[in-house]
Image (cartoon, rainbow, N blue to C red; front, side, top):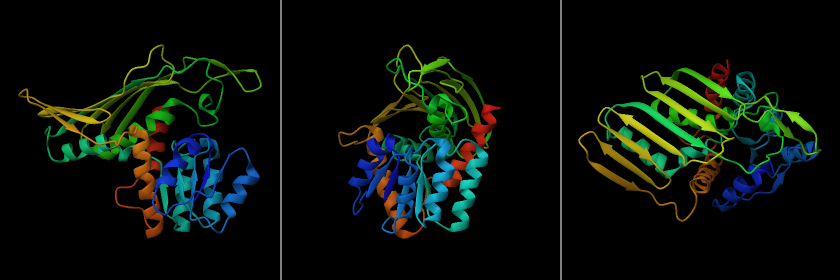
Length: 312
């Protein structure tokens, strides 16, 4: 496989695929090197192109990977908007290639345990989902694509896309969605030392309702004075699930408390999830079809349409 992206692609994706059985990463190229991207996508000894470039380059890079005859994995957010997501989905369908979306947190063992408990009726019929996380990054954070709407930036896409997918994965299709977004840092300094205006959101509150009536509130920020732990909870007719890094706690309406531990093998949830996902991606490419339950371009497109609605 080949990887486009020397940020998350190099630091997280490449090691995960190198750890997968019978997988070799032949190259990791920067998306800023157009000739390098072209050469990678033209290689005959590559089965899969994994795209972790900024969203404004996704459509071009997906097209090149598919034109080269490769299966393709694309990171989220899936392009800049629903139109670009639809174009990429169309290209993959027309070519008949294996296409996958990097919603790797589906393979977080604590989230998987929560999903199985929901399906087993551990808290009765689910009715509400709650998520919050606030991040205080080292300052000053330099200007980049994440701060620009035109380049596909914004924390709704960066973090919210994962949570929208989690809602769809746990509870089914989303019928209604809205959000309130804010931009706390209005200006940042770019790599040349110039001040650049920031117009993409760095914090948001989203409200969702699924077709089955489950409501959700997602409250996130990348520009916070203090970091808070990730909090995820699922409320049901007869209890509550609190999903942590390596535990799921069930609290029943009659006062019973039960804790389920998961084994991360000493790794962070992100690393563990990415390694599991990498192995599934490799198997999907070998089999010529996405494994059941795997996130595909269809899921990226559904998420992009919802975020378009939320941005309006």
